[in-house]
Amino acid sequence: MTIKHCGPGPTRPDLRRTPLPTPGGRPTPGGRPATGRRPIPGGWAGAVAAAWGLLFAVPSFVWAAGSTLGARSTVSPSLLKLADDRVTWFVAVLWVTGFLKLFGALLGVGLTRRRGVRTSRPLVLCGGGAAVLLLWHGALFVAHGVLVEAGALTPAPDLVGLTRWYLYLWGPWFVGGGLAFAAATTRYVRRHEDRRGLRRYGAAGALGALLLSLASTVTGIG
Image (cartoon, rainbow, N blue to C red):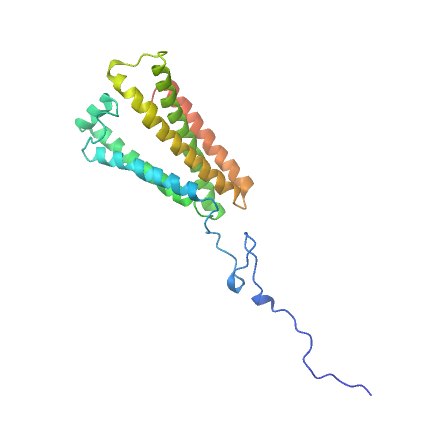
């Protein structure tokens, strides 16, 4: 005689409630995939870049609004005269550069959190470009100041008193900003799942900025 077992049979796992792994290896509640907008480990570099851009925007807006606070002893007299005379195109340039610096601050904020691939590509492109542009100009300021201090170059008479400002203030300030954006972009790419693709975008941004900087140096524009 066969005895039938009426008890509960073997249970099967409920796959619908099984947590799905995230890119970082941790499951999300309810089995939903992570959105990807999580803080980047070491995202402090992006925060530093954002603070740099925000602080650097302040003088542009102050001078565009009509004040020359802090400019008379640190900026070229020819530029100071344009600001004093409220030349329309120069005032417009000040406003535009101020907003560009604010854009740099937003870029730094964007590099503090992991984004989707479509958003990450322009972020890394702009981050690589900003790093090269700032490092290039900062290095030029420092190199020129060093050569003047060493007696290898003679500055124009109206720039004699400004050489050390560019050597000890503006040059290091630009270099510091470039290093912040370089560190933020590099850390972002290293911790993203699409590292290979983002490296290409970062390299494209850096190369474009390098070519633009070379053209600016050769033509004397910028």
